[in-house]
Image (cartoon, rainbow, N blue to C red; front, side):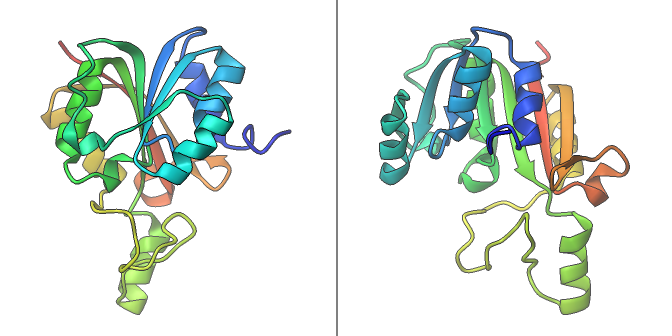
Length: 199
């Protein structure tokens, strides 16, 4: 089994995405997810990334990736340009998450969002018992070098979607390499959501 296949959320994404779909990955990093989806689902893939080093690694893998700051929007893309837009571990790092998600939902017929859960019980314990910003396996950064600008729980994200009339079509929560079904906001380290516009 490859390292890519070990990421159980990738398998969930593959279940959500149909064969041959067009996919735009916002904040695609080194292209690991795009490579997986090309191999497993034969998607037509494109990525957007800010880091030059990550883009070089993507290009070395033969991926089509453009350098852009998604906080500036996706004005070069018309509505419904892609079947799926992915924001995996990206939304909490952008300056304007509300705007970024709005753009993703505009450009994609469906949007996949993956976020760390800042209300995971280990994070709660770090704050309660140590009185410090949590550092866990899922949140490995110190307060001074974290790329995360926004701290939200899975319940926060669900509430946000309800308030904004965003449809959650499917969800997957994990801790380590296990899917979490029981009390996901407490025991889940990461949440993944398949979204669409209610209109």
